[in-house]
Image 1 (cartoon, each protein chain N blue to C red):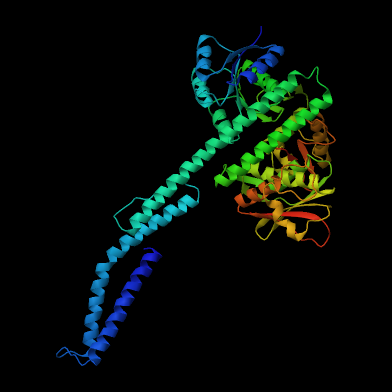
Image 2 (cartoon, rainbow over the protein chains, first blue to last red; image 1 turned 60 degrees about the horizontal axis):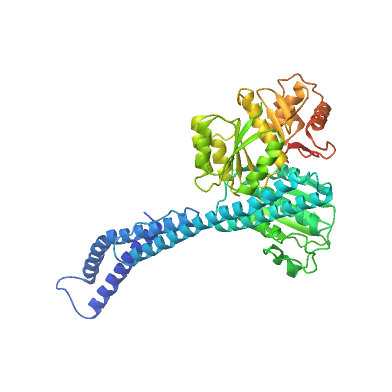
Length: 318
Length: 229
């Protein structure tokens, strides 16, 4: 029997018992008597009446609470990402109206997310196909092209590809609770791979196994490292730790430090620090770091260090 | 004999450049701009390989993949511009031999195309092939190659590399590595593992001084990178 149903029924019975007691006392004090019966008999009669009313009310209350429970389960399923969750609409009362409203809202959400997914797939295709053409063309003209210009063009294509990837990923993370299946990931091994891409990044720490999407966690680490390379001062240090049931990724560099007022804003999409040059990314990298951390039930913050250093701390549940 | 490739791609300009590029590499390319046209070409005559774009105007590329596999085991390379990994996974499960996301490096397309054709030519994928970017380990043939070029290492080093590859993305201590290859004839001194690893690195790393495939973790051991290239 559900907690809600028990509380409802106890409240009903309690009210009837209190009503019986008070009525009995007032009846007696009012001088009315039932011939040959004491106040106790009157109270007993009212208590019996309360029990009868309670017994009759029980199935009614049970039916109502069962429907509310079904509605609650459906809301929880929808919140957990099952967009096909619906509830049967029974009767014509307020609960039935609520169930119908829920179904309509869920249907609309499912349709919107479906349309969003299609849009993302199409946008990805439409944006990447011209890029594939450009890359193919640079390969075909390589004999006649200035190698420096060709390298520059390849770099531009890579940057554009990364930007498309980040915009689409940010959009997908916004729309879908669970992007891909998760698996056990060793953050130390993942960090070792990503740090090996740079010559001036130092890594230390211990193995930290988390359940997550390896592709997204790789992107999180890569974005933090890219951010340190672009905006910080070398050397960059990465530390992986297990602290209080959580895994911690700390990425620090020797940069000038970030003013407290600006720390939260750095994780906003397309935010650029004043004075930063135009060719240092679109400002999506750290926003994605936050999205990915939150997607894994974790978070990211900029540590308030005593020294003047930039230090980003990601915390994820183990 | 010139190998015939069926290119299923609806983007006319990309298809034209691909034909020119693959033609320059010695292939004879037949173009099918639609899924239905691809099925017709395949019914008319056999091909040595198929390059299939997953997003076609008339039908889903995965359906083409499914129908093709029901009829033949022609080597199949998928091209996909969708960001979602699901298509790639489903495509590989349906029997595609490999996939390449757009925009791709043309030389990588060529290397992968040759690799899937070579595998089929050698009697199909009789054993498991472990692939990490440009690095390929054919477990049946015990052959190691990068960009299709075979590299030679000793039998012990090969076993060590396979042990690494099977535990990609994990931190492996020297003791664990020695345990994993303990069936092999072993120079069991601790440091000898390091020597073997440096030889493997010389074979598989672009720059053995800046290793990106087998990474040293001070005080912990080694990590074989899961995502390479």
